[in-house]
Image (tube, rainbow, N blue to C red; front, top):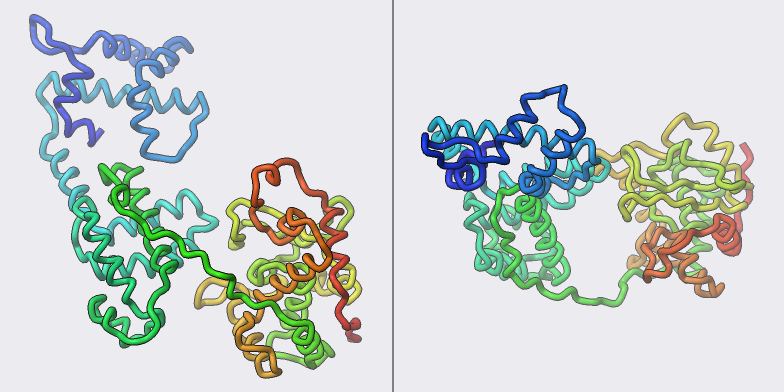
Length: 442
């Protein structure tokens, strides 16, 4: 309503007609008015007519949201829009348009800064993707803050291709590791700092974050055009995977640590079970750290980890759920007794630092294994995933079967068809070489 009241010329062109006596409703608006006057007594034919006459407004309204409406809700929206349309036409005819209010709203929209847009984006993500909102906002905050520091209070409608290019030039000279002293400097001063610079891909990711925020602004009609439409992104640099898998000797070293022989440790049962589970599943550490008792399920007769997106849980691929069979050795070591002793979370609550379940544990585990000779180049938890893939290749396991267990997106369209049998995954899991571990005595 606020938008259309700012456009008297549109109201005149669409909704009113000049008669001998002055302005009045156009013919289709008279039809709408007759339907609306029937109120709750309106027939199905009336509702269909209103929806048909309101096609143009419906398309405009639905560009502002990602909602997909059922036919019934589409009729409800058409009816409400029709009420506003008739009201706007009547205000034009009586020369009663609230010009001051409309202009004020438009001025406010035109003066929206990027800091304001980021707040708008956070509200949008909380509404549209509540399960991923916290992690998305956390990941995007650094990019947003860098750009706010650069662009200041400039309205988003005035942000140009030149602004984006200048910002990128500064980022490409910015230090990769920023301490508090460096972070307090302006971006221009940071660009003069010595040391390793942000990688091309890191800079590109920052711009992908900004682009997502501007896209929401465009969808919500806060912008007339996306500033990135005329801005060329740098090509993504393909780099050789720097993640180094664990060696067989390092695997043996880790699982001979005293904690696997029953010695108490800072993280207790979590310290014992998580490395074993990562070894036999190749899962991401956070996927295991977030598990609850209800995530240990029976799927077609096979005991599985149910790894999913849920309340306070996340996976890398949005909306995905996968069932990973639990290796028989894990069960023999007494895992179900451990599970049955828990009421909810199996391992830990979220960290206050970054809302991650396995964050504090991961730092402790990294210090522990490096103290016992595991290379610094190895990622303490994620390298189990690479070791698992190495084992799969040695066993000549099909790539799509690996992807199903690991939660990788299928690499080709044919792989997205059909479903994967739990039994196929179970056979793969059972082929992973057994660790030299025995069940601990209580």
